[in-house]
Amino acid sequence: MQTYALLFILLQCLLMNAALGAQQGPRVQVADPFLELRTGPGRSYPVFHVVERGQWIVILKRRTDWFKVRGASGKEGWVKRQEMELTLTDEGERTDFNEAAISDFTRRRWEMGIMGGDFSGSDVISLYGAYAFNANLSGELSVTQLFGDFSNSIMGNIDLLAQPFPMWRISPFFSLGTGIIDTNTRKTLVKSQDSTDQLSHAGVGVRAYLTRRFILRAEYRNYVIFTSKNDNKEINEWKAGFAFFF
Image 1 (cartoon, rainbow, N blue to C red):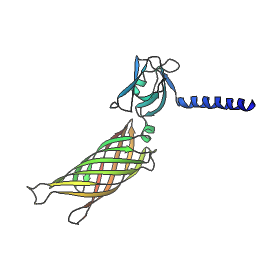
Image 2: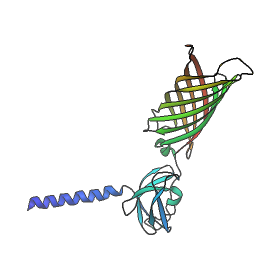
Image 3: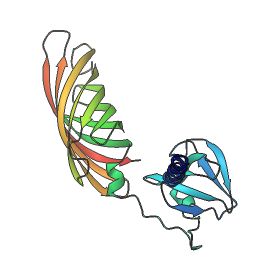
Image 4: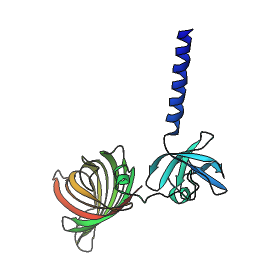
């Protein structure tokens, strides 16, 4: 009998711990007629469930201005901060959430930005998007337009970026990647053929957290362009710009 009693007590403790672990955060009450849950942290994700007024939801985690919550039915979804601020606390007061801060910068997943600079004497403008696999490593795709005196080029790159100190407000990073560059000469100025060449690069840069979801980014890259004439070119690029993360 004592063995069964001990097993019963142990089972009760496990159930209590599971119940406490399932909550995983503070709870708030829906005050509007309903609260929409989305499948992901963004307006582009569809609404798949609605929590009605008076029901309680548990806050599981935050990603910048989006919160992952769990309803009483056990369904989990994402809610925008402005909608979460219409919920009520246990004391019946409106819930208050801070703006996105540097801690969200450390935990970011997506980053998009625009940069401008110099590519061996040519003006450049670059658009990029990046996804963070974890706090230290991210992948990036970029498209760059180059404006030269005698030719224009479009360059596409895929890169890996390593960020050894993601928790720093001003955080250095290192990049390594490859891509292609398509060059179109101005035939009215020079007699030369258009070309499409492969390239690789290594770089170093810095991200500086500004405020809310915005950052400043600056970097240097050294490119090696593998031409069809076996006459490889080495080019330096400097650029800086702004980005936002989410």
